[in-house]
Length: 195
Image 1: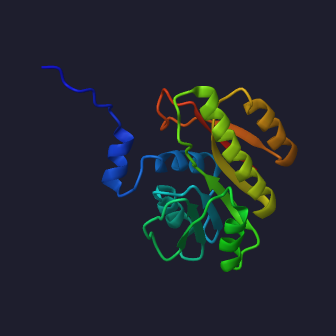
Image 2: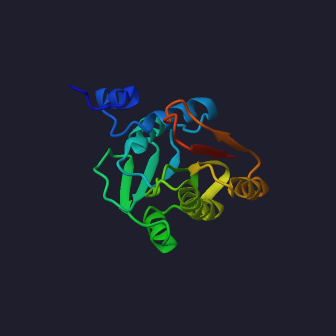
């Protein structure tokens, strides 16, 4: 009898054991450890936040004096007193603005985006869709990110990546590309850390 292939995903198992909602939390942990993204008392905007594992980690790091706002197309189960979630589409900036204004925010210390496009399996198409979302995230960062703040966003490698990096470098003092060891080997995802 042939056994069905079951991928060995120790990160997913570790997430389950430690109470995180998704394995992706370890990607943020790796980036935070390297770039010192999160500090107590910060205001953080998480775009594409469902199911909420990044928000869980952010909540721990910013503490009771910080506040995080998580936006997604889907509802996110409550996380804690220092996390607010809203249903909003980043393609509709007015909804994002309404969410920020409701909190009395005009700027944030950190913006993160782990938004995942609905993949087709066609690399060029998926990379193009990812880039479209990242352009929306970048537009929001230009309006709402504090000076010296960080923007962290996921992107798929594609032929337009270099042009987008050049655009980011004209705006940010520093733009780094990272592929974490948590990403699956076959994944074409990268994280851009912009400061």
